Image (cartoon, rainbow, N blue to C red; front, side, top):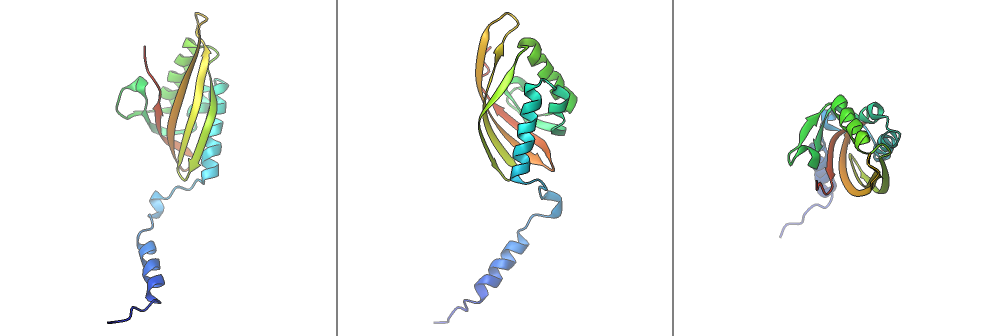
Length: 151
């Protein structure tokens, strides 16, 4: 029986890691903490109803999955996103989002929040929402949002 040279394992392991590293073009230059801060800032802009500022945290364009848009991912520009949120403000002039959970890991931020407000006809409402956001180079490039979209 041949003996395996145990000194080869670290060399083989390093070679495997080096060959499987992503290229510089695909590496996310934002840290987990930076990504969390970007998402928090986007929510602050939302709660201030500063729709252009909120949209500026997204890439141009960004990819969205949202029951409002159907069951497939769609591309939206920053202007389209800002306009969509301005329409939410018309529905509920005091709309706000309260973050209940945020988990950031690498380029992903998973978030749970309660969206709430009073409609123009004075009805109170609350809606639990979850989203998984993907960030790259300081911008949200993908937003998969989930909530009950009953009409």
